[in-house]
Image 1 (tube, rainbow, N blue to C red):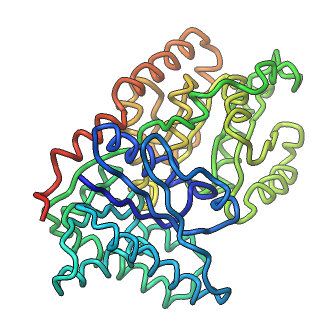
Image 2 (image 1 turned 30 degrees about the vertical axis):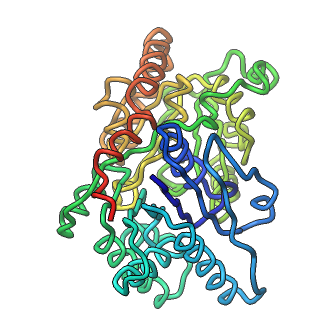
Length: 395
């Protein structure tokens, strides 16, 4: 079977294609399918990347005109032309909006005109419209309306929709979609949890050998800064020697605001901001930490998303305390391989953290169980097999 995969991003920058689409495409190729991935050029690093990955051919749409609107239209048309000209049996679009959503719509109309005969698949790993990513984007109101309408149209017109969370399954069913397949994220080969630490002695180098080290691995989209600082303050009241290590970078400078607000609360020297790091560097911080927190406010965005960073922590064997929201409940198996606390309960999260800090044997047991269960249960080869079985008959 010939499968064309279309995405909104390249393999650098945003991670949807690198940690979700590509691992699944590689497993489909391993099962004997001919797979090609068509991607837009979003930054210069895309053009410097590989052109093949484990049997998956990678093709990039040229930059096109310099005018932003014309450039985006040009790239979308190139992606659609490739998907049509390659004569695939299946076109698999990742994300229901922007480039990939536009490609699906164009091919749907070409099929109605008798100019295309392939099966149209759509994947979504977030809720993009109202209540979802639209709430976090600085877009004008009319563009947010377009995004919401495009998301619902593409979801309703795909032959099969794959979704990354149970909450997305529920939303798809509420929309009356008939063919929906649950395909949650699994660890990618590039996951920091599977890499060798670049600096195995990082904790000693930071001078934190004898101090509890709490890790936050984040892009700052799942929680409010005041909620984070309130929770950390509750921890400090119980264990004043605790250090908070923040690995990651916000989408709008949240780490800088965190630094200022922490200073205003007298937490100087208690929070270390590592910023955005490479995978093996992140692995070093995973190894250095005693445990991690994963705060999740109870929002539609958090209920529907499938957090790859949480998986990265679990597969690294880092014990995790998380809010019982959305896919975190699935990944932590209702608290069997991590600690879940009621959503937004700062005191409960602080108490769980302090309890684990005082119980190294339980931390070790949780970390080992998490790594073992994630590697056994959440696997792209299993998802590729499930997708094959769910595919509608090739037209």
